[in-house]
Amino acid sequence: MLQLDSYATLVAATLVLLLGRVLVTRVGLLRTFNIPKPVAGGLVVALILLLLRSTMQVELQFDTTLQTPLMLAFFASIGLSADLGSLKRGGKAVVTFLMVVTGLLLVQNSLGVGLATLLGLDPHMGLLAGSITLSGGHGTGAAWSSIFSEKYGVQSAAELAIACATFGLVLGGLIGGPVARYLVKKVQVPGEEHNRDDAPQGFEMPDMERPLTPFSLIETLALIAISLKGGEMLSAYLKGSALELPVFVCVLFVGVLLRNLLTLLDWHEVSDREVALLGNVSLSLFLAMALMSLKLWDLASLALPIFILLAAQTLAMALYAVLVTFRVMGKNYDAAVLAAGHCGFGLGATPTAIANMQAITQRFGPSHLAFLVVPMVGAFFIDIINAMVIKLFMAMPFL
Image 1 (cartoon, rainbow, N blue to C red):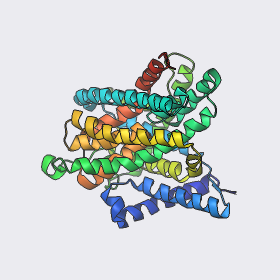
Image 2: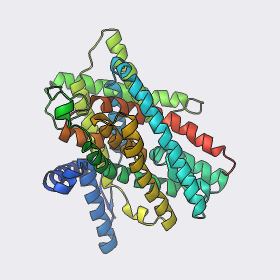
Image 3: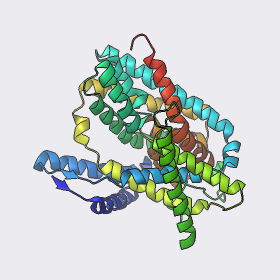
Image 4: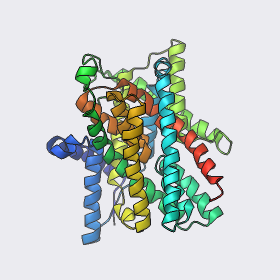
């Protein structure tokens, strides 16, 4: 067992990102299918570590202390980039996409419970391999697995939840690009449908150079830090109440509140350039750490019935993105980018969704609507709606 401290882990994460950039630049297949750079580099490293463990019994342990702060900084930047005026203009699209997302939650749980029953598994295991871990992620999976274990006697519920959420994180980053590639062929590319002179906003094109000043960067860093502390305090205050929310949702909410209060009171103009820069750095490092530290052997230990269930969920997500998300959201370029984002957080997490969309917009051009809608729905509304859908299924007589 080789243990890397937090500094060495950070160095490793930056090397993973550089490796991902080289791979996507030089391997045409990765570029063709729009695989995000952190996903490409992180999975290659995870596979190398799996090989070392299986052939030489060498295991590398990363110190992921910085992973959570990086994730929270990303969500803070999402909140700080959310101008309510823009959200109001995209209100109809947000509501429509929220309905589409809710439909997927119902599909995931119905498919999970139905297949689990057919395969002779506890139906609760099917629910755990449904929206709880796929759309919900590791945090939601950990919370519900303890309930399933204590109240319903589901064995190894915690391990199953972690494995399913990890599987979703990997597949969410892999299928978004191919799905978008298939859909982009059906629509006009941005050069024909969008104004190429329309400057990319926020997170749309992470490799674009942005003019910055040290002081403006420090101002934005201070706003992110305030969002982190404010979100942590709000989450602690709501803990145990009917309004309890995950820390990252509270951080995002404080960021939205801070941005729009400063604008309303005319105290400070939040710089979208700096917010996007720091947010993209946090996002890339978080994804690199999350993917390079994947224990792929945990996925290999899943029983065949669970593999079948998760494979079916992956296929269902891809089909849903093509047949429902893309069509309902307008069957245009924006809808294709939205579909890629939906694959990201429908199986994995919001950071994966953003990385998926960035891989598309970096190549084909900006999609303001997608980057307006997906972060708010995928990071804020999804947890509230998912909790309601899970409780709805828990009330069913067959569970």
